[in-house]
Length: 338
Image (cartoon, rainbow, N blue to C red; front, side):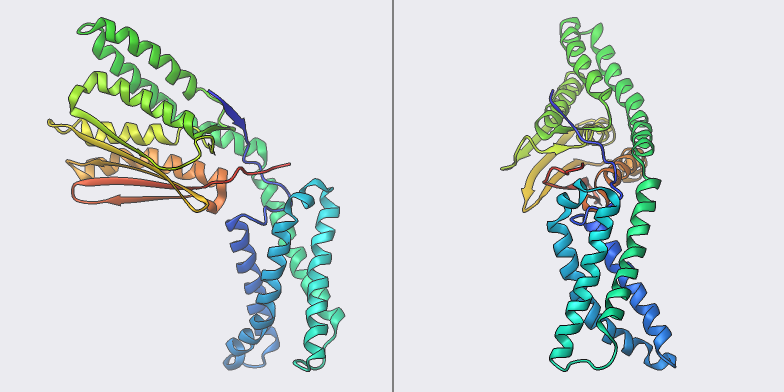
């Protein structure tokens, strides 16, 4: 199996293309604008009105700055940290001064000065850069790697025990099938012990899921049916390891095995614009039992997604009367780190 070295480390300069970073910048600047309006307004009655006036100036500058920083992200990451930060400050100050001169030329504002606007913009940018630098230290590569290893370690014992249990159930009744199952189990073991800092291709993750389901099919027979629906997606897309298998395991153990008649596990993988959508659904005999059994795997995957993608990835659950579905949405681009 191929793997792609990708450690979700954070750079002291933020990833300006990341939705989580954009959201934090927007929230941070708007909070500063709210505080500035509160300080400048003599009474609370005019506070929100003054904030709206400030927002009309701040928001266009902020969106332009985020757009330019997104375009220049890779270049900024190649520079020394302090030089990159200085360029971000210069961009913020330059945009503020240029916007001030433009509006004054149109007689839209009076008073104040371009230097003051530039200094205020640079001060706000400095606060945000300081926050992101502290955050990158809090989520250092060593700490993040340790957290990912701990999360993977929670998945592995349950996964390997259930896989081994499936093989043991075949040894006496069907020894030849048990031998083939042991060969498949060795591949599953290798996948489970993979470095958590490596991304794998979507093709490898699908292959692992199919191997696991084949192993379970030997144990459950015709009670287990699988409906794979793979759309027009690039199978070499990199995704975190062990995304599919824990959810497939839950689908089998909490949706198929308890039902005497069995059921069908449905796996839908498709690409929508710049997102990869993965949906795994199964019938449920007892929703409460199913939800309790899935809690650990779902929480584990949700936390690993946050470590890899921040707010760019989502995990959603639909729990109906007769169906339980987990959907994962991932960005379809390779993340670039220096």
